[in-house]
Length: 420
Image: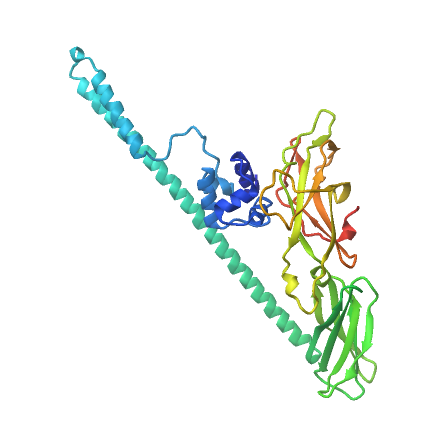
């Protein structure tokens, strides 16, 4: 099992919801969701807190230690337990018949005391060993984190340095730039202001600026001479998640040289509203029946508007939600749409921003391949009719029942990759 699956298992054994576990640990329900889906790892202090809450070791949560049987004695004796040992010894002494005392009677008591002492020492040693193991795991995890941060930092520094060197060696410009001038979300178009100053200008040189959005044909716009000896232009194209802007320098003899000026990624996605999609674990551990199908119980799914880091991008803006549909998908193909419904009676609290959807009971599915994946997904349509898809953690069939995969990718929001 993964770390996330172990956390989910223990949470369910203690009848805790993701929200309840989050409250106990001082984190959000989304944080628990990400831990259990293995999208992120809990911090060390949260692992320690969960080990105490679940009464397991940190090593077991990390998957490097087997869970100790629940019937093992406690790792250390409390004051109450020590008093019980003393009472047992006193009762043992009182139970000995006076007439049968012999020279071995004193040894019986001493042996009993010695055995109690040995037992106490063993238990204390075991407790010390467990604490030492937990400490070692914590230290190991900290060391791994430090190494990962160091490596990431070094790789990032090296990559940045290499990029700077390559730009300096291959640059045809002394100065250049491309900035977002405006965006029309209703028309799904974006406009850029660009400029480029040639590193070496020759008489008769001209510059064209190209814009490529990855789907339409590449557009070329002639640059206009500026007072600083450079060239400027205004470029526009359909908004997508991959836009490249380049400058094409043409000398008087017809020689053409091209330099990439800027790459813009995720601009389209950033303008669309985001939602949080939440299911409530009802499909986990559903089993295949005798007919080879999996019966699905009545299941509720909720959505609510999600904060997006892109919402602060004043150059582009972000549209409003027009509608949300939630469906059950197998391998990204629609099986059934869920019905919009009122807040279920079992859900308490102020859920004003939530929308609820219901999968009726009696739905049957088949999963015949190891690669088959089942998931709930929300199709979000914005106020201008543009769509994006947000999916939940998928389910796979393993040992005859539904469970979560060890790893999953829920980052594909492109409607072109979904069939509905």
